Amino acid sequence: MKLPTVLQPFAGGSEKVAIEEASTVGEAFAQLERQHPALRRRLTDEQGALRRHVNVYLGNDNVRDLDGLDTKLPDGAELLVLPSVAGG
Image 1 (spheres, rainbow, N blue to C red):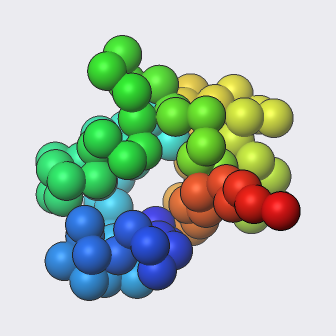
Image 2: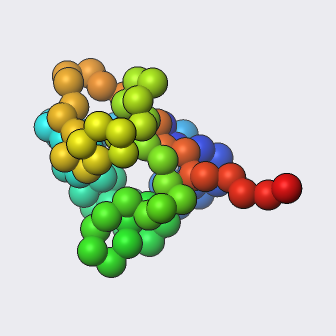
């Protein structure tokens, strides 16, 4: 899983975090949060849903346009986490 610069301090400074044997995006996020608990508040809400300002891409597809956290992960898949940017 690739993390943007703004989230890397919460993952020990890592740009990439290895996720082992996750069959869905939700399982990958659960592993990520176990490995780096500080990321939890920044990625998911109290119910475990993706926060509105967090976008997760599987290839070129936003997982919100697929099955969200239930999106199946093919072997070797790479997820990219991108927080929304606001401003004017």
